[in-house]
Image: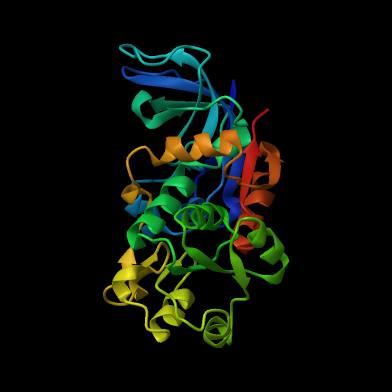
Length: 305
């Protein structure tokens, strides 16, 4: 038997149930992954809570939960030639990741580099691609000043490091408890909330060249008030409220090979991605409740070990 987090009705974490099922087996072109860890993303609980969001991602209930996962291939489907049993991999499958065993299309996996822990690998698929797309959309250049809103979350931590690596000066919004951490990443932290524009004018009197909003629209609004060209503002969660000209991005806009490059950088220590907490599968509801609170530094994961 295999443990599996299932959701039969739309709603909050109280709808998540850990059940046991027969072990799944891969079909042609698929592999089975023995999951070591599953990473949580805000989109996971939004899919489980809102039917319209679920429909947009092709999920119908009853379904499993989560997308990102990492582990070891333990079974191959017919015709799979590029993978072997025992290979460490990470990737995703929408509405299925939080489980002992997940059947995945072989093409949806990336090899986990030596030196990269499974929990960090499990936190990568959505966050890494989204961060790469958000930064790439505004194309920061050396000497420019880039504003990143929501910089301490999973996407934000990676986006901040990618922007710093471009040679740009990075001004990053976060709560005060995350300011020292952002300084360690090479960014200049500033508090979000009321008075943001005035604080930005004080810290960057020469102006801001580009902006990346990773949470709502407050950073977009501040950037526009500071005179940033909308074509150099990207957003990942502005929804229908995104102003004209601002670039809406998501993981689908990542550059080729971005996931592998970021994984390699994490493996060699040139980038970091903190895992704030790891929960056993039996405490998945608690983990999702914490994720919904929106104040996680880095990522949350579910450990299947």
